[in-house]
Image (cartoon, rainbow, N blue to C red; front, side, top):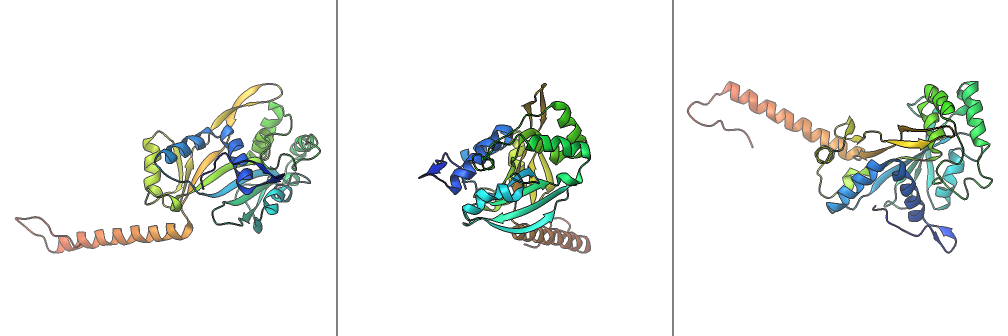
Length: 279
């Protein structure tokens, strides 16, 4: 799905595209590489479909995953599995979209009560600053709704990367994920990664056939006492699990065929002419 400048409010109601567009606009402000990749693919003629959007927040009344998910649920997203994240002190849940052309929503919340008393005190002070109607007025695209000192950010960062990130950026999208399967001009993730690297993007490759992402951006963030460049978000590239499995099988079969051809050449060498490989 190519996110465009859809109107956020129509007849007083938030639209699905409007909500996603607001999230995207807020997200690329702190993750400029995502907009660069998006423009590059669009210039190639791609219509980009996002597999999912991942939002980070704190657990707690008015700000936890259920509160943030309310805006999506009103538009038809339905909650699915809950699970503990691989990251410490984080719980996550996914929401399935009402339309296959819309992305899934993943919301991860920091389990504040598992952190140290000092971290809980800092986060409690941030939550106390929430506007009265949060998240109704801002949904999940409001940016940072509180003031934060750099010293408190550093305390949180030493204990939990997720907690420090939410404190610095507020509840918002940490990453969008491109559905590589939906791209028209790339046969697989390997080809897409090579294209982006050729155009100057640095990538982290979790699985060369299934998942990669841009390196974490660093942006300037204003604290109460200073301004500092800190890690922000990434733009993820994901190949649907079934297609990734099929691609792995294709690679294994190709490697096996190469091995068979090599064995046959060693067993039946041909002199005075080119070797004949099986098709």
